[in-house]
Length: 579
Image 1 (cartoon, rainbow, N blue to C red):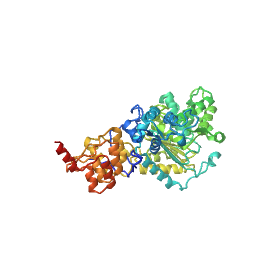
Image 2 (tube, rainbow, N blue to C red):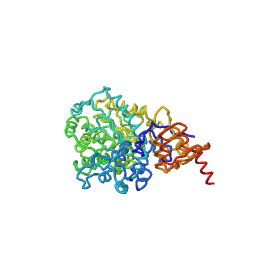
Image 3 (spheres, helix red, strand yellow):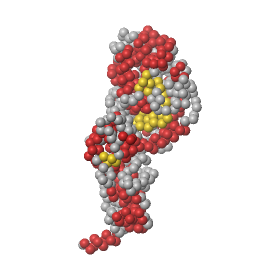
Image 4 (cartoon, rainbow, N blue to C red):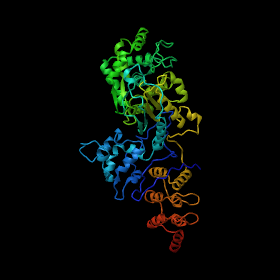
């Protein structure tokens, strides 16, 4: 029978009979919705119960029946949900605020520590499905804490690495501190992790090319868009003047194709309205997080744009643009969109929106169509990393787009978006540290597009896994969890209503094994939350209390006796007398 991997011990104190942490390793061995990185994830949100799961909620209820709000929020944060920033939780957080008039923004010190059960259920009704999924570790990365620790290790190992230099053809980019280094993660379920310089604005530069293409395909469809640009890697520099065999720019990820793509964006509108429209779409994809604009960079871009003006006139001469295109306005829009600012945090959400099939993970808004995302990711995979695109596809194997300000938008379809930002560039114009980070990411995790084919056992797959549990497997895993103090799995079993009184072929129960291994916290959990019998007998007529005496666990013995525990001989004698 399959055995679930045990996790580090989690203690439950006398004043905390619930679960303090769903912190460590959960390899999902239950029947759950498939989350495959080769396709877009089916989010658990929108499919769960309409209210907070009662079994799950009971883990956060005090003896007086009140909900420990501070523990709920702490657990959300441990699993990657940011309760004070996540738009999905905004209504709940306002209702949890001490200030009922909403005069203050909810914060750690402004939220109620405990609430009546009914009051909390009403407050959480708008986001109950998010809470159910997050608190039961039923998200695309169930052991998010462990995953983040590994990302943190990669970040720290790279922190002092030097290499590359800032782009210098735009003065504003050359002046950025080359020591800036940040990594931000956003999963398709809205789990967040950031480390380093993730709130400092930078210009997205060529990363805008992928977003502009996705917007255009979503609005006009691929046939119309590809009347003006191709789909093939160019094999030449990103700013080369030239067309493919069909007389079109090779793809939208290099300058000729990106300029052509800009000519399609709301071409009947004024330049100001076209810019506002695009910025609004970027903000939507970022879940309302930071999107700005650097006018100084725009002016520098325009003043150093001889090559791009030459490309523009070349495209116009060859009839690439839509009819009546204003070339100078199109180039202005192209320069403006390269000068849009984001942070690593907001860029990670944008990348996660692409990973989630065009639906923003933190707002659930449909930003672009799934077909547009599929086309965009295909071209990011083959053309998104300048002249390094082929090697990137081979070594990293993920859709990505880089920009000369030092950012790389990395998309793991169906799983997460990542932004790595470090301004110094390698000789091909990609972030030196960003490339190194991506390689280390793929060395550690099985995220390469073809790792599932390879089936490498040397890598970690942190995603939610599917396995149909038979009753025998469930018993085996439950007993193993009780033996190994695996509170993560025990909590998951509480959430789905598993019967903790089930026994193996020797009639040994989870309570027997928890006592044998000296796990007082598991014993308390099973008796208070699992509703198990205190006096089950195995085939040798031993009860849990017998085990406590046998292994001399005084605290457990006292607790069992307090709960009505009896020795096996006493149970048998009483049964005989009654008979």
